[in-house]
Length: 239
Length: 247
Image (cartoon, rainbow over all chains, first blue to last red; front, side, top):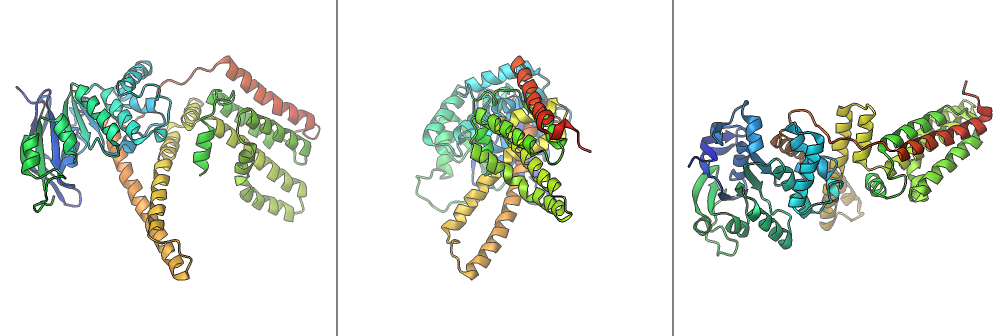
């Protein structure tokens, strides 16, 4: 089976010369959910920003058979939906409905159709009736849901979520978990939460200093890298 | 904070709140023109305009005291020009300057306090205000809340580490800390701007923001617009120093 995402020998340095990714090889297959684990600064977020073409390093990034380039960028951005860690950065439009329809309007869909689809997406994440609200009047959990609706409305084939449980209380995390389980897309979840990783992913990839230090069944990776806060600490590696 | 209070007011449900933003902007424009062209010394007309605005504020359910207080924000600026007229011996013009600037500010406060910012910006856009200018205002308004919240958190964090002392040495230290906090806020705002651009790019942004269709202009909006132009115009004609235009 051909992978949905294929990355070969991806390398990236920030403008100040700091190396962030040092030869990443990665594959994502249809229907699977992969958790990206690793310490802060290990390169997880930098890596996923390459999958949507926001950052472009050396090496090969291929999405649904299309190699990332200037020409394929619009199509790739349509196929890869990225939900950012900071919902406040994702919700920049004056109202919730304006924000959810932002991507659709960029795709050239008519305002009327975009509004209809936007309301449907809001209903899907349990935020029906919030369309007229301003984003700054939402709670952290609501912002997270609206941010997700803004990506889901574009019907991406691959969903990438960067720290989706940040700022969420336990009920909010539970709701998000249930929602993620219902979504049919292939998913990449960047997270520090082993609970989330175990609940949604079959496979985990562990990042360390810009490299993939290990990958395999999520539970095994958590054990191997002692990535559970409840485990006794035996000299944690830096990142 | 001003923008938080006005934002709260703008979410009311009065007759005035439900009117189309375009109608309110046009009514405001007409009011400003009528006030500006009223001859100096027409104190009766100024009182009439004031009563009209007060009635609008009450109709909208806005706190009269709050509206009057917020309108006064222009007075320090107009007072400087009024003082110049006063020193030049033109008392009538000095008073007219204060009256007109205050009335104009009151009208703006009422319109902003009865129109949610997104609707106001959309209304301005459909009236032909340049999109780029409105985008700047939109982003500024949107992130004013986020940045002011961050500033608030930093203030609380600083307070928690004992910056409340009034000793001179601590006051100096607080000034340094405030300067540091401003630079941190600037750096955070810069980083947030980058994050926002990434979020926009991730959803296909290519330099142009499209918007959903504007609301329909209904007959109530037309009636409101006509009434809001006719009433102050009638005041201007009846009480504005015999209805003459300024020389």
